Image (tube, rainbow, N blue to C red; front, side, top):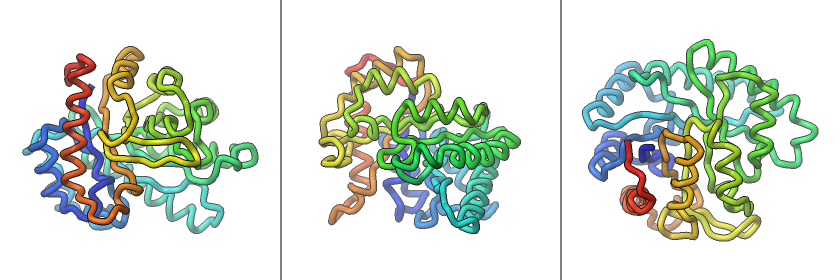
Amino acid sequence: MQLGYSTWGMPTVPVDIAIRHLAELGFDGVELTVLSRYTTALESLTDDERRRILKLLQEHHLRLPAIAGHVSLMEEDSDSHAANLDRLRRTVDLAVDWASADGPPVIDTTAGSRPEAWASKLPLLVERIQEAADYAQSRGVTLAIEPHVGSIIDTPARMLEVIRRVGSDAVRVNFDISHFNVMGIDIEESVSTLAPYARHTHVKDERGTVPDFEFLIPGEGEFDYVTYLKAMQSHGYAGFITAEISTMVQRRPGYDPLAAATQTYRTLAQAFADAGIERA
């Protein structure tokens, strides 16, 4: 396994600074976020900028396992859905531009909607994911859907049901275990269910359970990273463990994105060492 960091927690940090800082800390890779409010927003990435960022990654010896390109797939307004689908397809094209010898990075996205819509909206959810997956598969890219507390896909069982119904090799999982931790789901239960389908991961830290919970910077909360890493290894996962700083943390007065990355690296690098897992 390798250790990565998502620029989800760095919306205003110039990409040059972010990449340099993460490389100097010792991260093995980075997930770049391309939402509109980020310095690496999809609409700002000209052909020249795409080539420049790829060169920066190569110069700093950072791999790019994933791109955070979250859109809602469950917009009820047809025009809004069309815009989201178009953006997701353009993010797939970006993944092709940023492909390495390992292939293109996966595209991380959530599904949207609410848990209570599961029964009534499942057919639409499957249709929407199939629609996106067809394009991704045509370009050799994997969509990594992230189950998320408070969204229509909020449990490991629901994620497996979606994968089964969609029936596409282009649809797999961005496994963010924090969403299951705050729902009181045991580490072994969520890992054993989703690790075989995971193509990327997120980890945070957290305290409490739904509805009284908060996401935290790694090292601030209750999560047992050593047990988690050992479980992921035992269930055959060999990819990136990528830290993500939630918007809950980013709203703090005086939030420092570089300091958060530094604390995260120290916490997770120590967890790898304590688990006896050598980073590939």
